[in-house]
Length: 339
Figure 1: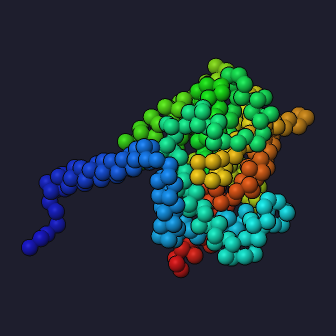
Figure 2: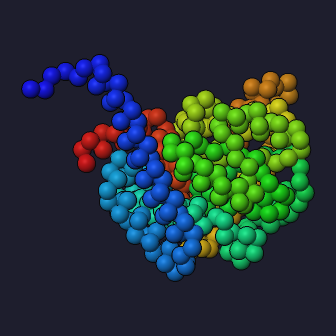
């Protein structure tokens, strides 16, 4: 006969659960880090087909992510069609479900490609980038990335996310940048080490406000990926015709430091081939405006530049897999239940 657990048995249960959890974390870390190291050393002719296969499998098995990407992409391409912006194949997807679904499939493939690029980041030296990346705004790069100084480089969860920062590091030296928390500490340490290898000093999100401002005061550049509100403290803004929130960090740093701000994005054109832009972000300063008003004006400018970057290849915007617009989330979850 099995009865309720005694107090003594409860004493031993918690440590056993803790031990099982640690074992699982170690196994997950071993598999994840092993996979990243494998992608680091495999030849390119192998890694890109593997990424494509991974993207196809993920599309098939990830119903909620598939639904969310579909809803988010539809909003983007409908805005593009209504405003006559971007390539015709994207505008067509606003009214053609088959064309839209093809973009959703491509979004999964690009997400897998990003994983490969993250794993292979230590291989991306200055020569590699110069051979693979076509810069569409060379005059801005020459003006903004010629000397080490206090500046704020804003990136997006778009395309080759790491590459704008790596290009900046190679031209003006190390960047200080925050990174999202990774639940598995061993995986987090590995990602920290790979980014440190390319000249990026990583700080946690909790340390970021103090560390980034300190770097700017030392006349050092900082980098932030700022198209998705992770902490919940973002500023409301209109993006692709609907209200969302984006992080307040860049605007607050700019208002406090006066440092110049630019936005960089790199998109994939083919396996291992890229095109990118670097655009200065004007810092609007209406007569008599408060710091809060200046910050909100800058966030609106950010959103316009983000739109300009994303419409080049909306299927490469990895934020599509996350909540962006609150009004779309209910539809996403309802579709997921019916899948």
